[in-house]
Image (cartoon, rainbow, N blue to C red):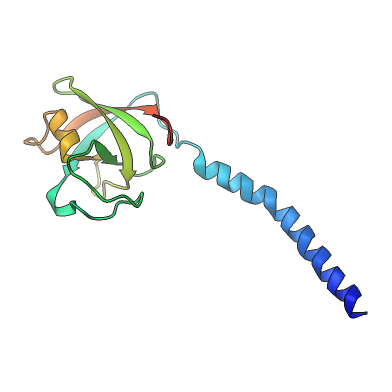
Length: 139
């Protein structure tokens, strides 16, 4: 009798796991799908540097102001963006490794190196166009 209950419990557990597995795979697939961004999206970028140097980013990496990285509020971490300064036409490719900006009206936070490549360090705020050029894991 105890063996029958034990087998019944194992069968119930197995059926539960089989029923839940497709849901978990579907949720996992949804998390890995790129967030929608128009072919090009315009906005205002700012940059962050010394104060954040060495801190952990949302991706788990250590922030390095000398790398070409960016913080975006919704694109998957690892997404590669081509960012163009609309004032002067300069472009740079960055990798999203953090979340932000956390200031209303801003679309992107750039590392100091990325802002410098756009000639936007002095200005601080840069009108930009962003275009996805690579998904997480692509090189």
